[in-house]
Length: 168
Image (cartoon, rainbow, N blue to C red; front, side, top):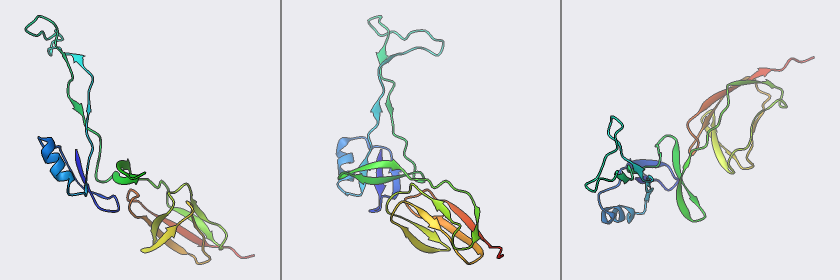
């Protein structure tokens, strides 16, 4: 499988392997492609649809590999990341959270932790950087705030509604 990707790791194209290694090498020479080879499946005995062994000319049951298992790579769930100088396919991180409410008191907070360091989000369309692995949001202004993930996260959107705090 050949995978074309942008410098940030976003996969833009996936195609089956060409017929020859020469063609694979020519595509890889463009430098924005990665080759993910399939894995040869182990040999196994072959049977007819009725369950009878398939025999070769020598009368022995045919035992061979049923083929190659290709890696699972999808545009919307995977990306390419450089790990120790080598490009690899990985699953895009997922932020799993729901719409929520907090008090608009500047203390009560919406928190998402265990995030990649660094990463970014959009807050009401404006980019915010998270450098320490924890997104923490609090406000004294009542209102609804829209958060969105940006690449490499899988697309997600949620709201945090800050409810005016009751003053004694």
